[in-house]
Structure formats: C-alpha cells, structure tokens
Image (tube, rainbow, N blue to C red; front, side, top):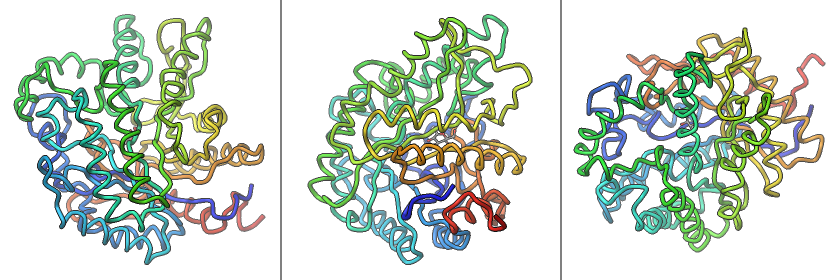
Length: 433
Ligand code: BGC
C-alpha cells in the first residue's frame, strides 16, 4: 500500500467557490438575479483571496505536497481585452506562497465561471470563445508559466453533457415517482430548478447584457456546437501554453461517473461512458495528462439511471456513498494512455467519520490500480475547505477543513489529519503496522 516516490497529495478548490467577491464573473451576476436558482450568493466565500497564505501554510502543516486551485479569468480579464496586472500579481504571490511552502501547484485556468463580458458575445456558443480563452491563457502563462508545473485548461470539459443527463434522469424519475440519481445533480441542478430556470432565463440574461435565447453558460452548453467550442477552446489554449511555457504539463479534467449497467442497461451504460470520455479523446491528443474526477456511481437501465439500491447510504448531494467508483473509473480512463491525476474525489457530509472512511476506501482502490501498473500520479481530495457549492450555496459540506462563515476561522477535521498523515508517510499502512 506504499505509493510511488513523488506521488502528489493534495486537495482542490476553485476560485469562485473560495475566493469571494468574484464580481466580474457571470456567476456573480446570476447569483444576484433573485428567484429559485441559487440558494444564496457566494459573497465573501472563504475569503481565500485574502487568506490564501494561511490556507497554504495549513495544508503544508497537515502534510500535503500539492494544492490544486484555479486562476479566475474574470479577474485577470475583467473587460474584453483588458488585462489586470494586479490580478496577475496576486496569482504570482499565491504561486510563490506554494513554492515557499514546498507545495507543488496544479492550476486550473477555467473552473465553470467565465467573465461577464463573454456572455454578451454569446458565451460558450460564440465562435470567438476559443481564441478569447486562448488569449487569456497565453497572457497568464507567459507571466506565470515558470511557477506552474501542471495546468488544467478547463475543469470538467464534459460537465454540460452530465448536467443534461442528470436533468433527464430526474425528470424521468419524477414522472415515475421514484427517486433516482440523487436529489441534486453534481452542480445542484434539480429537475424542479430546471423547470423554474425557464422563467429565470430572461432576467438572468438581462443581468449579463444578453437575451434569453443567447444565454450560453459553460455548465449548460448542451448543443453540438457548444461542445465543439469547448473542445476547440482546450486545443487553442494548449497550443498557446506550449508556446509560452513549454515546460508546463497540460491537461483537462473530466467528470467521470462509474456507469454500471443495471438489467438491460449494458448499451446505455457504454453510451454514457462514450459521451463522457471517448468524445474527448481527440481533443486530448497532445495532452500530457488527464485529470480524473469522480464522486460516485450511476447504475444505468435501458433508458435512464436506476434508483439507488434499497438502503443505500446517500451523501448530502443525494449521491450514493460509493468510494469504489474511483478505482473502476481509473481502470477505464487508463485507456487514454496518459498519466492520470485524481484531480477531484470526495463527498459532502456533516459526518466527518464517513469522509475518513470514504477517503480510505477510495485510496485503497488507487493503490490497487498502481499495483497493476496503472499510471496514477496524484490524488486531490475535493475540497480543501467547506465552500460555495454553486446553486446549492454553503449547505453541502465537502471540506476537510471547516470554515466559520462569520469569522472565517478554519477548523481542521479528522479527515484532513488522516489524509495529511497518509501524504507524509506516502503509504496507506498505518504507522503502527
Ligand atoms: C466541480 C466542483 C464541485 C464538485 C462537487 C465538481 O463537479 O468541479 O466545482 O464543487 O464537483 O459537486
């Protein structure tokens, strides 16, 4: 159960979910539209924009060797073509803080949020978005590349296809009056919210200076054209990064559920995997690694996801507690022939003893993959901090470290100590063994 030398141990965050006051982003505007879509606005979040030094030092003290965080496009380019030197200087300081503490940074350049101005052009359906995104990536990497050994261009390039499937599954389940796939989709899109979203689109679009039929948010880029634009954005960004920072390793991350066939669901389960993974293989040609992100399994019937098994333990997201999913997904994703990092894995729970159990079981699966020669280079728990879970606000607790939303005080949970201890010793075997 020992891990290879240099295996990266970390936890992950995303700018909008932890920094606070991301006011030039599309999400910030949407959170203030009112209506049912957002449980609450992100506000100061975890004030990580100000407190990053303390947070990075805490992660180091716990034993971690790496930290995955995102740079916010809306801060770096708050208006079309206008780059903020101050924002770039801020991220330079964050990266320097990582290096000072012996923490290897893994940076994401787009994690769901986009600048507001991009939405005026048509967002993720706009033909110019790949070039605009690549220009931002070029600017950041020309300045900060030497400090960034690993970069994920886009977080979960496949998320839109997953949100669409989730909503379809939940709508079908509601029709059949049977709960399935969880009470919420991964980013908190419930079937009810999808209904209500129709009325919400008009004020939401107005807040972003566009019209409802031209509101194309990253998470809901459901058309073939939108999917192609996302893929092109990655390819253009990779090209720009390789030019200005050739030593940085580049990849994408993918949301990969463990699709298991239920009765009669073999074909449908394979289709879902193809949609989530195989579709992106051409765009990954030229990448240095792939980030695998997994939270649970989905048991698929001939048409839709099947209800959770009777008595299944569910997380706060309504997913089944199923840490074995990670091993299954890593074995399958190895077919890309790229080194893999587990860039996200975790669960939302108020009961940290379940997190301890989840992490331990998930890592046993990673260790079995390694023993079989599968190339996994690191593991990042989602998330370092209890943070802003998109439409669901602050209710789901994914963090290894609790955050008091009034005082911003951090409280380390046992799961953080466990994972930090594993990181320090680089093995799952306990010190007593
Ligand atoms: C996303 C995170 C999110 C997490 C938990 C992933 O899909 O990358 O931003 O918080 O899942 O739902």
